[in-house]
Image (cartoon, rainbow, N blue to C red; front, side, top):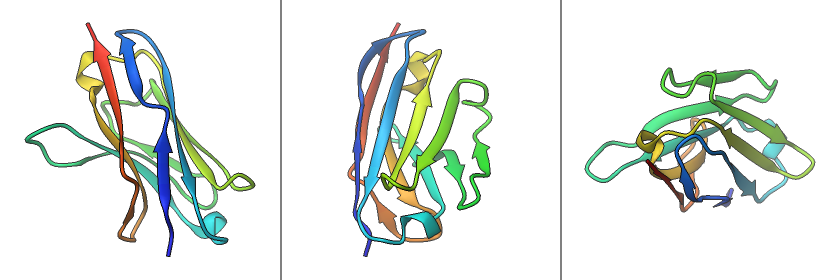
Length: 113
């Protein structure tokens, strides 16, 4: 069983930055591939970024060059650094354990124009 708690969301102006954090419980975090997803009302949840156990990363085309995913296994935390934010990045952001049905509760990110 893994519990995930996101934090760091908020309101920011277009062009600004935010860093999201996702803290995990349990002792096997270093063995888990992790991902960030986002969802807006009326739309399906979409993939944003992922990081594997060997620190390999993948990004959605819409965030490449602006977002950076990272992890700190000692702190059992995965991060999403978001720069050059756009209004279309507004969403609830969720972290998850890839290939498992473990999700956080989500954190709201709102980007004003």
